[in-house]
Each structure stands twice: as structure tokens, then as C-alpha cells.
Image (cartoon, rainbow, N blue to C red; front, side, top):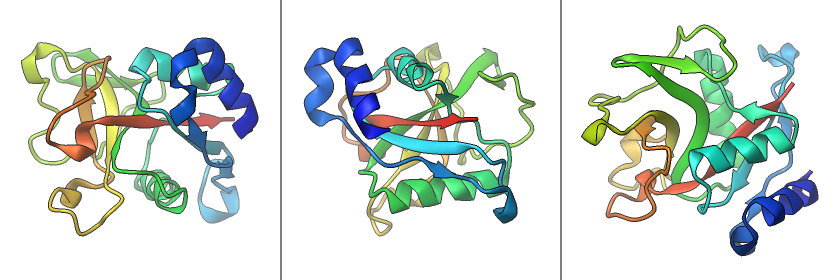
Length: 174
């Protein structure tokens, strides 16, 4: 699967392929309380939310939707096991109104993992969802590791908050 994603990225963003990496897809097994869906982490900090959605679609999937605490724990273990670097990872969450969100799959939005202070729609432009991730659980910002953030569709490419800078995406294929 990694090779196919590399080729997709070559077509979508030729200059970005040097930083592209991915882990093998992992199934959230029904026997483990999962949904039987395969998930994959793609490392590519050049991708905006729209670019991330195109990569997921090209792999016949969609950006990850997290609808339960069990699925949240699974996604966090996927990031941990894949050695995902510190940064933000695109997910299939989008703003549907002032204080409302929806999943790109139209699944019910009944579970969320926003930390205190989020979502905050900073500057009125944060309409897409990301997962904060810290590779180092001892980092001073790691307390929000695995929680969600609303971000602009372009994401954040620089700044002094490492887990806010876009790093890649997580997608799932049913």
C-alpha cells in the first residue's frame, strides 16, 4: 500500500514526495471491539486538508472518522506504533455551523475528543479537524496528545507549537 500512496502523492504534489512516508494499513478487528476497517497513517507535512482528502480518496478511503472512545484509543495506538512524528494529522471532521461539527461520512457526531479550550475557531477560519500528536509523551505540550483541534483547511505550517504543525493524515478504507 505504501508504494501506491507514494505514486498518488507524486501525482498530487510532486515536490512533496521526498518527505512522504506511510505505515502499513492496520485493521481495527471486530473481535477487538472494532469495526473491521483498515487504517493507515501517511506522513506528508505538505498536505492541506483538501490534499489529504484526495490522498485518502485515491486509496479508495476517506479521512479517519472517530466515533467512539475505543476507536480513539485504536487511532492513538496506530500513531504510536507507526512512530508518527510530533505534529497534527488530518481527520474527516469539518465544521457544520458555529459550534457544530460533522464527519465527512455523515456518521453521527456523538463522540468528540477536544481538549479544554478547543474547538475555538481561532480567527474565524478553523473549519477542519486534526489530531494533535506528540512523539515524546514527556514534552510540555504532550498533555493534549491524541486530542482534537479545529484548524484552517490549509493547516499550520510553522510556529512555536510543535503539535499544531501539520504532519500528515490518517485515513480508513472499509
